[in-house]
Length: 444
Ligand code: AMP
Ligand code: GLY
Image (cartoon, rainbow, N blue to C red; front, side, top):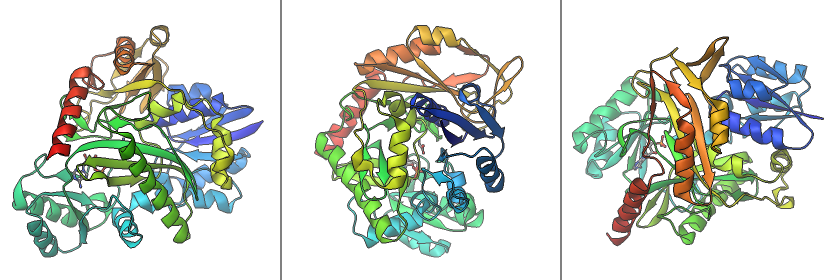
């Protein structure tokens, strides 16, 4: 029996744990900071601890004689968990601290793409002085995205037209990022604003080659019709052909080539990338451009993909670590999926925490939907919200709109006084809008 440890207590990790448990001869262990009831149920044993507490996690892995570790979130990658595990001889299917810089330092990632002339790059500059940032912003006419250099959980980015207007608005926020060290560093990245439709491409990487997975579209904005603040992601969908309704095969291939080239460049930099790599792209009139790279599965995007994996996930993980992914036949069910998150009321601004959610798991199962618990706490008398996303419901079907209906049927079995869902995700109305938007961009 092989012992696998999954680090993280969100819905992404619940989906990872489920895929681990579908693998042959595997026993699951987990480390999480909240008591995720889905993960608890699947685990032979678990440790409640902060995922970034490297010493605790490593000691637990050694203690339990873990054979393989899978890290879900980015924060423990940045603290060097994978390197510390490897030092103790514990195998991990996630990138090292150095390789994870593709996510943990936007400046480094952009520099890498520039150095290796990787397609999909954008015009950008990094600044520690507000006056220099101002000059760059003015040169781009204020049509920019302003980003902290470090990690902000997808919430620190502000974009012209959405969050501010003109040169002045951009400069004001850039100054704020520098002054308040938003993201942990007194430095700001300014990028040209990209116009188009966003999509996510996740891939398995063994350090040399990638195997790209079906494309997914996430919904970052809190409110229906893409209004409100950016969040960690409110829900997502994917289509059975692996593309998206506004995307053609060439766009998909071009995005895959970009990820492949990033993996190759990391090898040249002597930090081989092993594990899942995630590309957030903007499909522009000039093809896909890189918005960001993440060093892990997306959340929610993972819940669209791993439930469709027919092959043995742990065998794939070993192939990634051992650098022989080409030996694997990776089979993914050709189905469409829609995932919607249930979040606490106030999420993205000020969440109502410790509010009870009633989940009728049998009801969700009966309508054929899947349930993944996220940042909730299980107590004796029920499940309670934290400040983060609570749980995700996924509908799977041949047809995208059927998948959306199944997801909504499932959501009816989740009740709470203080919960919120973006019901427009995966609906015909929103998707047709996306197609129209992309058509207008291509024609411009
Ligand atoms: P990030 O944390 O870099 O993924 O940014 C969060 C969100 O901000 C992205 O999902 C985009 O919607 C938006 N964004 C980031 N960079 C740009 C850009 N250069 N142009 C337009 N929108 C962007
Ligand atoms: N859904 C965005 C992310 O996982 O970063």
